[in-house]
Image (cartoon, rainbow, N blue to C red; front, side, top):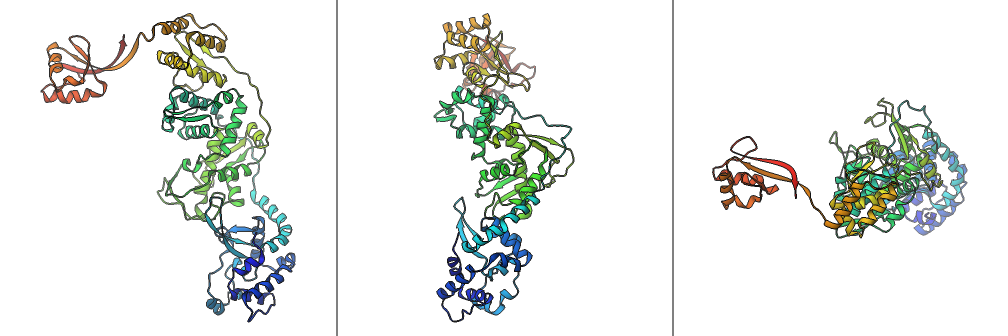
Length: 572
């Protein structure tokens, strides 16, 4: 807090003399230092509780809000409600005498010596202008107005429980399972952020933003390490995978609460432009503080309105709503000014609830179907905190054990991993088998292939060790055919494979010979398949058609003298 003498020194001499007149001090002819000492003594001796009674309603509210905010408030925020203090030089002040007819509550307090202005750094090291109450006055006021300000804030909240909806949206499941899929892919071949989108078929909840969040959290939890091939699992992975599902979900919630992942960049309907920055943690901490610690159902719009009333500047500590370049995707217009709060901050809060909080299993939601949301951009949504959320917010430790299901090894080398199987075992399965696309509501499928066995061999996992692992985790003997295939591969390696090729077929062998012999078409042939067919290099078939056309020979996919077709068949 700034002391009263320092605050007064920042004023022009004429302003000091005006404040002195208000408090019956004759400071005419005195130098600035003497004026400051005289005013500091007079103001420090005031009975501030009594002085608050003499203020107008708006001036009293302004002082109360400043005290409730800790004695200072960003100038843009304060001026939005209580007006500004006009910047005037000594000559204009003397001519217009603004203290006699202040244009705002702020200006009235300014010329009484209760309100001052300064610059200071925010948490992001940016300089922001503030209005403040000097330390000596603040200490006298804090006991007088703090209770009433708190009471007023609670009254403004208006967050009341509502009846449970008839239809509840299905819970968002599988956050730790999808992270396991990411860790498994990183173990198999290294993983870069651009590759995460390719893993969507392996996720229980395919969503690019959700996958991006999980990849970021994996880095921040130090479950991944950097290598030349991309991200690889760290030593901490195995310990984390052995934890119970509840412990893993809590770890993700903790990591998310302090993550650098930025929800604003993923909020639907918004396009962000320019080089400005925001702090994503401010949005999360504000929302978590505003959440009701109750299992009841609430309107999401009421929660957003509560934040708008109590802490609207949570994302913009300087209170300035004109420096961010954000476009509304639907209208194409820029969203600036405090009037756009619900279209920016309101949408952001809505997305945090329906996105990350739902993904993490911390809320359940249900839409009533009536479009009564404050933004008008969606149906009124109800939400409630899950038991996991209440335990996390109240710091109740999760269960440390869980009942898991065994994996299933099928004939043909297919492995099924149930949803409630151990994530540690699923990760180990992914080390020795290739993941296949996931079907919602079905176990995660994997298949033992020569490629996966080569990967296992690179990790010093031989046939005996693999068979022992499959026997232990499935709880039953490995099917005889799968056992023989694993052992045979170790002895002989890959004996057969499937290959997708472009096959050129002709009716007259002479045509094929001409194409093979001509220097313009010869480079596109990969392998002969007899007198009537040849394999064409996969990426070159269109160039072959162009080269053949230049020789007077047309190649197409229809039934003609020559045709080209894609086929898949066995090769040995």
